[in-house]
Length: 239
Image (tube, rainbow, N blue to C red):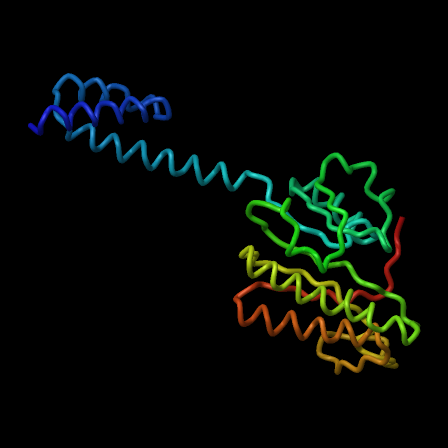
């Protein structure tokens, strides 16, 4: 028989775990207390610890996973956010409203966290806390015909923002990135059936920013072991 202090501690732990136990083990509990030994107590401790571990795993698997959507007040982002809410994800929308509209999310705004900010400032936002399951980067300037004086703005919004997203993902240990590219990276192809293996020949500045963004995503994510998906959107329509 082990020292009484060990038995007392073991009994205390047993009481602590008893509340979470399977009722089928109750007869063994009483047997352990009546004999005064720690053999059965140790066994029960292991049983209950494994039980609690399973509950812990199940609990966190059921918790809402956080997803950040940049440009979430746009047409694609708002519809995507609404869909993901129904799938029990916790949504954080980051949008400066320079293109999107708050009206697109007003019917579910109370169900999400909305942060009005430019994507380039994402690394300075203190209110984004906790584990992030994924980030969906939709925010971008998307006009095809732009003036020369606007090229710096497009570079800042469409290329520098990608670098900020990648840096943020690495710092926050986010392991999933979805990037909204564009079919315009294929250029003025005459093929009616385009697939991912076609040569990329961006023919204008917007398309070129998306082309560079793809290369940045691909290289950075491979180096930092981040899972990524690149979506080349064609014409988008819907309600």
